Amino acid sequence: MKEIKVRGTIDDRGQLCVEEPLKLDSNSRVEVVVLVPEATAINEDKPSDEANHQATQLEDYFSFLRPDDIRLKGTRIGIETILYEYLFRARTPEEIANIYTSLTLEQVYATILYYLHNKEAVGKYITEWLEWGEKMQEEQRRNPRPVYEKIRKLRAARDAMRKADGNPVSI
Image (cartoon, rainbow, N blue to C red; front, side, top):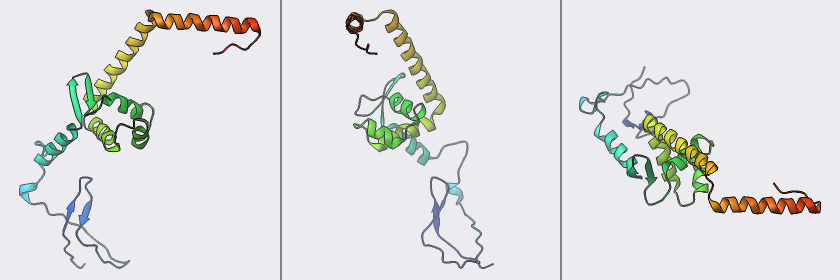
């Protein structure tokens, strides 16, 4: 086998990126050997400075107002809003960015990536948010605001009048 030396790097997905394309014929066989200098070898126990830097950059997209209130910087939109669309409504990041026009696609991807990097903590955050929402809905059903009760009575009266006139009742 003929030895060809190629210079390149490994990207964040673990794929080899070569500086110059290889020119091989259809019968060529290639064996890739990656040499990693010891000074930059990956230590499983200690995250690299680059990994810490990336995590810091990711968190720069958010305002951590309280443990139960994480919002996208410069907006009033919480991460739960984006993650609900993504996880429970199976919307793509592009669809989410089109729905929430004050957000950039980059912010949507950053939120999803933040979730993927912190699944346990963000999963708990979302669960607590959903439980709180259910609790508030139940509270509103038990104690409706006076304006909602007035609207309900007006609709009932309107529907009774339509029924008396022989018109179909609205839903």
